[in-house]
Length: 299
Image (cartoon, rainbow, N blue to C red; front, side):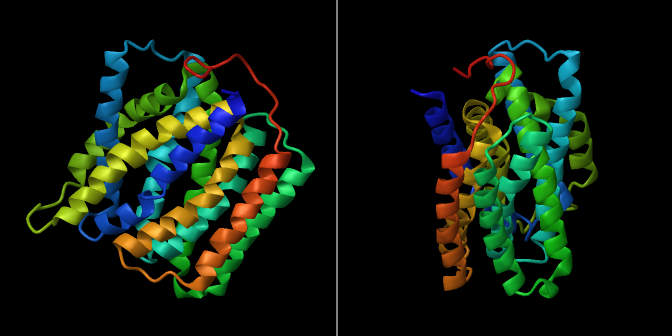
């Protein structure tokens, strides 16, 4: 299968998995402290990642990869989960999901800065248009309703875009699943200690939905989704495949309406449909400059 096509397929699977993250987080933070939820999910995923690395006897990353792993850990292991968990105490998951539409632009920008990619000018038009549609919708809903929640979501998008781009670049050397596993393992000393520090006084009264939410964000959002996502970015290009994130609000809004019974307005659906056209346009004009050698396990 052609690398770009395979990259888009893997990327789409990753986006579908990630679409459940915010609804699951929204459920979990009703019972768990946001900081505890962040470090607990990272610790659980970290132990699973360590098990995979040991099972497949993966070699340790070189010293030159240390900084990149720290950036990935900061962006997607700690930064994005913590900021979104805090934000979801102020806004609904349906509202926060709309901000995810800004991720493709953030990822593309960091793909240029950190990954050395050079998309065609028309690509930026479609990418900016898709992000503008999402941002415009958020403004129309009244940002003053929760400036703290919206500010936290915006910060989450920035650090996540950095983590995505850095992880995709590192995946060309380490491989997709190896990159997220090593980032999780690097974070383990911090996440484990903080998990015990923020351990709830009692677990009594925490219902099944909260536990299911924790399980989902730990296993799927923190590990499984990244296996497909980083592989897709490495195969198809950071800026190009990153545009698939514009579809994430569409999937996420559907989950929020189905599982959480949150209101999904016609305006939300209109924005989600409109950005699909932007994804198609951006993909047509995206171009990836090959950098470095092929990643192990990324044919």
